Amino acid sequence: MFHLARATGALLLLVALIALLSLIPLPIPVVTDFITLYVPTVGLTRGIGLYDYAGQFAIAQQLFGPIFDTVKYPHYVYPPWFAYSLFFLGWLAPEHAARVWFWMNMGMLAGSVILITQSWSAKWRMIAFATMILSPAVISIVIVGQFTAPILFGIAIILYAATRQSAGLFVAGMLLLTLKPHAGLLPFVAAGGWLVIRRTRWQQRALMGVAGALIALLAGVTLAYPQWLSDYLAMLAMFRNLPGFGVCDNCSGGSILAVRVFLGYPFISTALYGGLVVGLLAAIWFLWATSFSFSIDLALYWSMLVASLAIPYFNNYDHIFSLLPFLWLLKNSHHRLEYWMLGMAFFLPWVGVVAQDRQYFAAGLVGQAFILFILMAIRLRNHHRATEMPVVRA
Image (cartoon, rainbow, N blue to C red; front, side, top):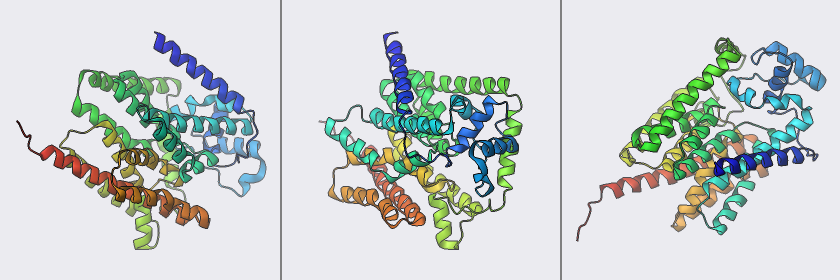
């Protein structure tokens, strides 16, 4: 009871702090990716459906004027519980809501680093925070107000829950992964697979809790919005039928950049097949190298790097997925070559920033993820060798 009261008090204090900080003017552009989330929440306060594109477009024009005569208003293609969980943003003016979301993102990013560095020394925690602040992907996500920070925070909560053997926190982290399904899918599968394979008593409770929470979530959303699934699928179909959907010039997942290099054009369908092959091979390698005996941090960090390389729809800000694996590898490296490779991985995205070129930036982020993927693969190989070594008895 004491821990629950302390957690509740800390949450209320954080909410009050964010509300206070949101009063401070910041040079945050409102008409960025943030409106993809903000306009639907405004629609909720006015009785407009989450997947009513025409109704939301009318709200966007009313809020932001004629800018959408020249800028394409984006589709809300996320599950309904994402907008429901942030419905309060719809009560705020655009500028104020953008600041609230900015500080929420900063809080989730900082919270992610705090949770994974619980057992680290003060020196390493300072290094971790400095790395986060200087990460181009982090800077990108807070400026445009994108939605990958909750996924990162969910992964950090899962890792923290595993160290505390807390089934409740594990369930909370898993639910956060569902807010942006295409980004959270592989970490969700990795964490769920870990629960299924290990099956200790608390992990069984966590597995049952995740299943129960998902059923309750779907049931609650269906009661509040009975036709949500048909509307959601219709929105996705509309999104897929948009002109130019078959190519994605702004995507920067590893698979689509490889397709662009080899075929000269970023074909989504080809990248999806390539990404599927990469994902399957990575899963086979992981299970073989670990002999089905792996820690949750190995599983999640590997899945994050695989996601960055295999999923075509990743964009520049989604590459914050590399942050936690980078910090883990930096903390656990022991060889000079590893440090050199990590240094190269850190600076590669900055080449695109300095050159002010989006494609260079994307290539640098994918290069960063690939270097971390290689280093993690070496760790897995060493894990395999260690498990094969005979036990020497005195």
